[in-house]
Image (cartoon, rainbow, N blue to C red; front, side):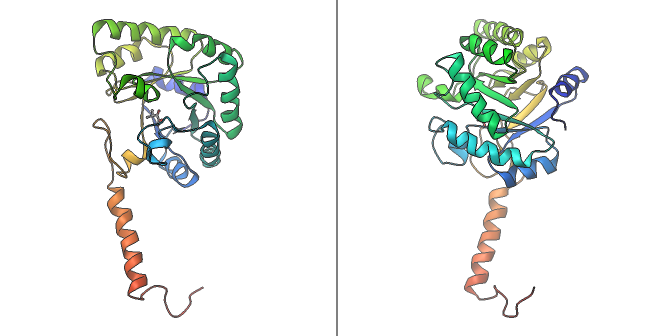
Length: 261
Ligand code: KIV
């Protein structure tokens, strides 16, 4: 694990896989760091897995900054990525920079936004000022309402070719990372091979330089998309702990009568 972005480029060249997971608060970010992940993403998936909304559209910049602060406090080794939420960057390069600096001040080290060459000027403006940008391509959940549903991207030869060209152009324009969501595995492999910068995948097959998953999906704490895997039945484990506590209070086996210090 390292906070230095050049180590991600070295890892790419060596074919060493890097691991990211989302986190939204201090205790979970600390667990992720203790588990040895390389990066923690404060994703706007926050809207769904923490706030209980159906999509990510309700999340505000202030909420992202609040959660980024908690996560950044826990991440002494792993790189902290944070999402710009809907409506906080699209308007102009200056708006994008202002919002990005709010998250930088909160402790983020890499700023991610959804969308490609339509934000080329934003990217060049921010990169010229030293911002580490991760560009999220493929399925971009902030556009869910425009699309009407979660849709796989790059499935036709034309859209695949467009995505390859876009990814390469974004790296040329100053992006430090690409994130590909829900694109065919062979397309993700092609982009990863041709890209000079690290490519992070989610639902994009095994060949990207890094993988990211939502924490709650990894831990089995909610309904996960088909490409994710729960590595523990966290919901069952936690429910059982809470049920044991409830039972112990009701049957008066907790607290103990004699106080232990
Ligand atoms: O918001 C998020 O958690 C994300 C990941 C799913 C990549 O963007």
